[in-house]
Image (cartoon, rainbow, N blue to C red; front, side):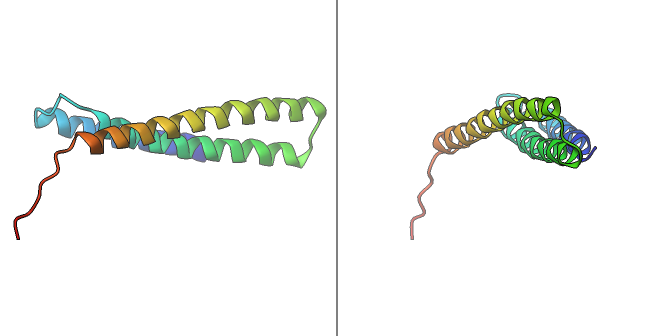
Length: 104
C-alpha cells in the first residue's frame, strides 16, 4: 500500500510540475518532470520489493520463494535501468547548461 501511495504522490507531483511548465509555456523539455516522477517510481519499487520479502518471510513455500525470486529480479532490473536513465538524463541536462563565468 505504501508503494501505491508513493506512486500516487509522484503522479500528483509530476502533474503539478507539468501544469506549471505548461502555464509558463515551457514545453521544449520535460526532463526535470520525468526525473521527478522516476525518483518516486524507484522509491515505490523498493517498498514493493520489501513488502514482498516480508510477506514471504512469514510462511514461505517453495512456490512463494520462486515467485519472490522472479519478482525480485524483475524489480531490481527495473530499478537499475530506471536509476541508470535518471543518471544519464541528469548528466545530459547538466552538460547542456551553459557555464557562466563571473568576472571578479
